[in-house]
Length: 94
Image 1 (spheres, rainbow, N blue to C red):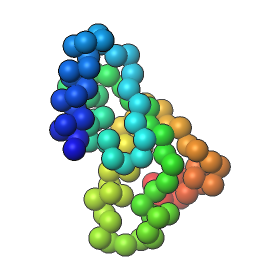
Image 2 (image 1 turned 135 degrees about the vertical axis):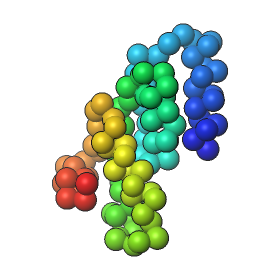
Image 3 (image 1 turned 60 degrees about the vertical axis):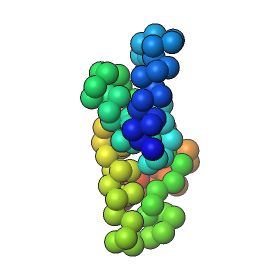
Image 4 (image 1 turned 90 degrees about the vertical axis):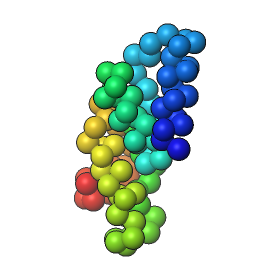
């Protein structure tokens, strides 16, 4: 899915011109956002609505999703956190 998002981004950029910044929500687009950041030198903003820890607890089977969340928090230029409770959770978990 991330490869498809990245390819679609490249096609959109050919039509609309270079973007200044991109924006994604939660863990799903993290790999695509990081490809855009690395290959196109375009920063991104990430909105966090929830975390895997908050949805399913500290389940080792969810390590990949948790890692993507951490990666997005680390690599994004800015974060948008939807609630104070979510901000506290992010500080605690990541």
